[in-house]
Length: 601
Image (cartoon, rainbow, N blue to C red; front, side, top):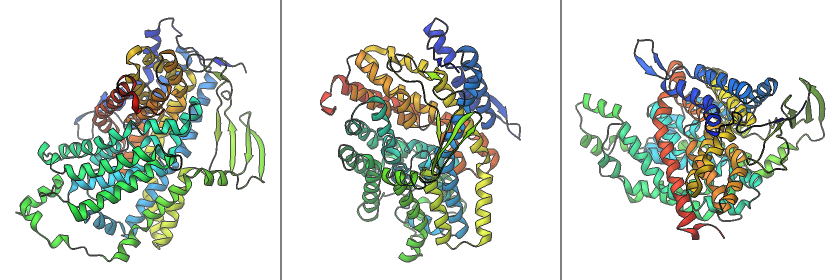
């Protein structure tokens, strides 16, 4: 087959080509968030069933790719299939293990002890949000990434009594500042590889941007939570010492760790652990709020019982912790196993070992006419009608760039999801579940994940299709025309990449080279602009449909709510995401022209 060359202005008009390239994304967004529908009771809502919304977006993507941009139909189908397959190992496999583990802790009854232990660090719901969504979530992001923190922390918050909707929204908001170093620094490693810039230099640059956001995000979280619960700005502000402790401890450690050769890839893990310890000790022994903020449902229950908030604050009967230290440690063991497994699976040396574990056992065959085989521990499949048959063109890539590879690598042993699933299996053994409990945990997990898996696969397929047909590059090139303002819009290019692909790592692979080329053309600091792709991208994580569906799968039990929550969640986090990217863009703009000393030498 002949190599197909991408065209970035197929209609001879840059504006028209950009508008056509945006059709699949606009279609997806419209059906997710704006198309009217009526529920079972006849009430009118915006946004349709998630699988149908994803399907219409995919259909639009095929039409634009094949009709508008001239991509061969076979290559388009192969690109879509490549995305679906890659999504299973990269995201879906993680969610299966995470929800399976959570269900087993519920079946064993140990989650009640975990819940009590968290509550007794602070009885204030505002501060629980900080501990779980921000600090604990950062540790999970640092060890495994790819949606794991939203799934785990979201499920924990629902178990603590938070509503599924606010659990999803708050964890999506929290999973921002740590994302650049997710999965043991994978986004930074990828960015260095595609841009050709030093890895440590890019990490240090990101570490001179995101700490400002890390201080801001906890305040953002608390204010959003209080507003969702019908509270006031005063109630959001009165916990500022605890909020500052969580954010500042994380930011300080993030600043220093990101610049060290030994720990820069472990920035999230070190910063998250430091934040958890500092915040827990601060809340337990140094400071606690004068008034206690409860969930709306808890306040309503108090009112029905004839009690006031003052009574709830002074009543010490519920403050007595009912479990021993050994019981608490045993209940937390599954989560400890999870963190350890995620940390081990995030180590490059361990991944290399697993990938080479069965290196002596090889096989080779063909699948749909393309080579399939290799080592048993790491087989690969060259995607038919796609591998080395699509050529990206300048200025997206250098003039001598090779055709786009399309190799599906089945890293079934070294995938992060394998570590999460192993943690679930070990937890079930540690908790001594009966055969009936094992079966019920499997059934609950399967029932909850059928629809999210369908949606995530479709959206990831759409993302890969836009990448291989070149519409993502057309949208990206629109940002490069900003001239003097480009440092600001460089953040939005990374933001767009994460929205399209669902991953900061994939966004860096997509636009890292383009960012460097643009920086050279505009005589801007390359390290600053390239790193801003990753730091701006973290703000797109909360609005990509894959992440939202992960949150829905983790937080919602009801099947109807799970399939229809995508629209309301997206509409809620959209402006947070846009504003967050603007903050990163402003930081990059100031560093480009005012505070140049913050750019690593």
